[in-house]
Image (cartoon, rainbow, N blue to C red; front, side):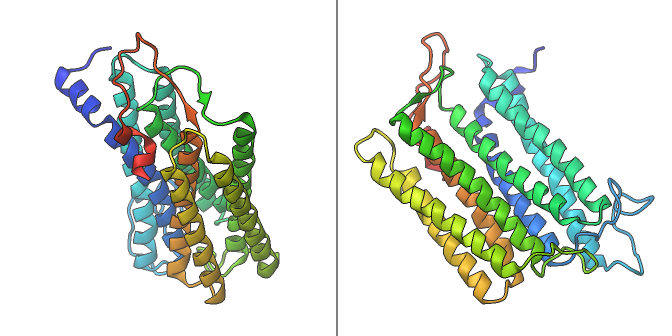
Length: 317
């Protein structure tokens, strides 16, 4: 399958830009999803894939405010934008020469993830915003953010198997840290599910005490921070870029502080969305540290340009 030279040149020139854009888009749509939730617009479009029966777009309705309709419809429309960006990532990976299997796979993960999220979002609406469907929706977004960071990194790497830059014990610590981050994000969705922001006034809440869930969430944050401090000490003396690590420390501390302010002030709407933005930033920074402790040398016959100091994922976070 061939393509016009102008198209392949365009895709090749902006391939890294598309990859960085998909990191931002996957994290950004989670933030807009939180705006849907805190404004009570989760059922602004009560059907799927149409907004109302017989109409793909909002229409005047006596029981659903126009604001709620357009907020929810806007979030659905952004899914299409993310899909276009992910599609450009796939095209750039496919037409690039030499074609690199790992880059193609990571790009396909992004596009497939957008399709999956559209289905999950539809299921969420059709089930009346059941709390666990909203949790799954958010967690999948964070997973796609992680793989988007790996896609950006892959563009500056070779295709050889990954080689550790640190002892295997530290790689194992990072695995545990990544699992802890997943549990931390999961606990955060539980807090939100039991909290005041349901996405719609009629949506049932998770019947568990918010204070207990918040404490579990905080304990997991302290555990994550403790492992991060241990990792920082252990990385000394190893040939690993420090900037990704310092960025991760900064965003974790900022996210923790924001979470405490959010709890003390009664979970105001704007802080909920900022906290979701912070969660995405923590995922990006953690994935960047993950990448920095591994290297994938290029083969002599790959024909890839050598990676420059400014081309790594660390320079984008």
